[in-house]
Amino acid sequence: MGEESPFSSAVLKGKVALITGGGSGICFEIATQFGLHGAKVAIMGRRKHVLDAAVASLGSLGIKAIGVQGDVRNKEDASRVVETTVSELGRLDILVNGAAGNFLVAAEDLSPNGFKTVMDIDTLGTFTMSHAAVNYLKKGGKGKGPTEAGVIISISATLHYTANWYQIHVAAAKAAVDSLTRSLALEWGTDYGIRCNGIAPGPISDTPGMDKLNPEEVGKSAEIVPLGRMGEKWDIAMAAIFLAADTGKYINGATLPVDGGSWLAKPRY
Ligand code: HXC
Image 1 (cartoon, rainbow, N blue to C red):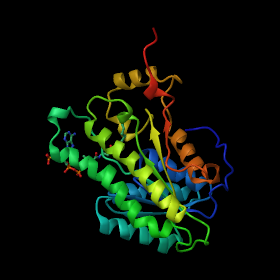
Image 2 (image 1 turned 60 degrees about the vertical axis):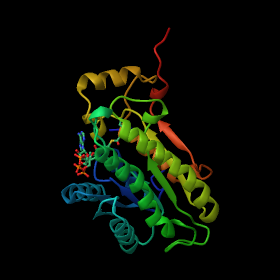
Image 3 (image 1 turned 180 degrees about the horizontal axis):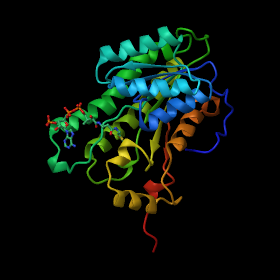
Image 4 (image 1 turned 180 degrees about the vertical axis):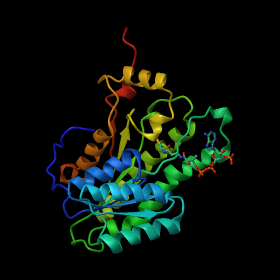
């Protein structure tokens, strides 16, 4: 568990957030922290039992939450999930694109369809959800005043800043996600006041991504982080609050690494 939040518990009061992949891992922590800071939350995922458990857990913390089943690769699902969020929770202020596919595989063992599957979930899914949400996020969108605009936060990675073993598909997909963030920040920032930003987590403990590595590799990940430790899901959730709330009101088109500096790590000489 992370420490006490530095933000006021009302910093997201009145806001509604839709978080894809919000049933587990980092994005469940984002959903929890958004809720604890005043937002109502909708979580989207493919597995109903995961969503049900997550909604129950959020409810036990006093958070108003709904789970809406769907696949970010499917544009009908995307529209239905966005519309359900707005009809049940009244409006949409924050979209977090967190749904992601990942597995470790050597490039020569990865099939083109395996590559495409991760591109589809991470990159096309981010575009599809953003596209489905834009009319609700823009200034004056349903439930919003004429000057109130929403925010998109896309979860990226630092893999593609250099290169990483066995992650060619994820690195390509996240590089494209960062590109989407910049293009949408330009177009939708200008036209609709929507801020589009990203968060690039480093090695974060207790996540599905880390579970795929063996304990020895996890130990090595922690050793090379300049700040000397793995991150916690809480660290990512605090960055998400910072970007979603007015603390981030002049930030647009940025992807913030939250990795303890790990992508910069070099052996000392
Ligand atoms: C090689 C694999 C594979 C594996 C799937 N494929 N798993 N190839 N190694 N372990 C290939 C399949 O053979 C198939 O290609 C194609 O991918 C589609 O597989 P399906 O199982 O049909 O796809 P689907 O059911 O849609 O599932 C997609 C999935 C997803 C990507 C496997 O279920 C998944 O990854 N779930 C894990 C979610 C997760 O861990 N999320 C956290 C992400 S963390 P062929 O050619 O055979 O048809 C993250 C952080 C990044 O993103 C940074 C980390 C450091």
